[in-house]
Image 1 (cartoon, rainbow, N blue to C red):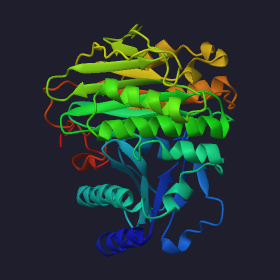
Image 2: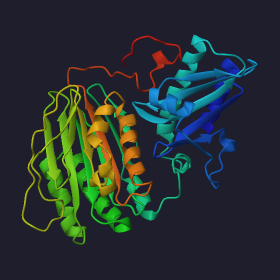
Image 3: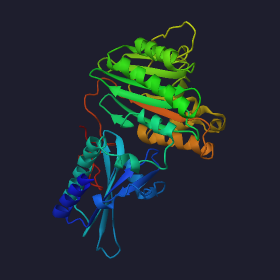
Image 4: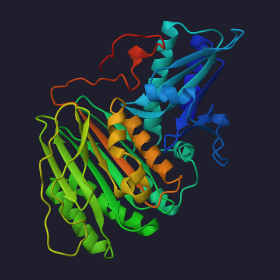
Length: 395
């Protein structure tokens, strides 16, 4: 937490900041934990959690615009700024000042928040403080395994696309995972769902994700990635199986490759209309019958939103949720916020107790002609002023 001390000192010296806090967003995106200076962090105590719903914190995270307010007597001004890197909303920077900040001060606060995002990303591999703060409750062994299989950043913005995922585990973890990676010329995504529950499901998920990542990092195409995941299930899965979807998109020409291993069909939002993409379905990874995996094209055009999900999003109680209507209704939201909304509706339909993991992954495809990233919904420094009405900048 020394990094927060450094930011506090900088803002204290330049702006006269009286207090500085970093509010870390939890895994579910429903609350934040306040981390003060290093001496304020007590990881042996429960996190001091603040629910986001209906608060100014939720508004800042959702809009990625800083908020300011001043006490009635004008003696103290409060500023809340997003701490975000490439669309991954890490948390918030909150500080109190002796007077309302001007445009230059707001820009400096935005720059500090942006820098803090990079610092957190660089440091979180070396400490459990951020993991501690992101947990709404103690994790079971199965949930601990599951979280370690997810990408370190749950959202990412690039020039050609934006991707975001959200996962809500069941009361007994069901083995869902999602993953993505950006290579030199491609972006690759996967969503998997291991059979069963609890540790057995998490171990199956570990085999599948490990095999897929190993093959992918060795440069294998989708067919070979699928084959190696299937082989891992046969060799080590104790007769278990995993369903999955693999997607690979060329960042040079927009060409797509897709594998469906016994998984629910993806949904595509185009021109306000949601449709199910009825691609060919092959056997799940680990089914002990001779079969192969077809690599198929997927019709994606600039402006499309692709939704990949697990069957927990389609469970009996979730059928009361108009998923297609909700996808269309949230089309103007950043994929990060749309994913949060979709998951929240499904959780609410189950009264907060899921029988199966619910996972959704959203991809906004901008097309290969986009050469610069629109960062209006990230931590865009040029838009740090709360009163800024300028058009979105690009980075």
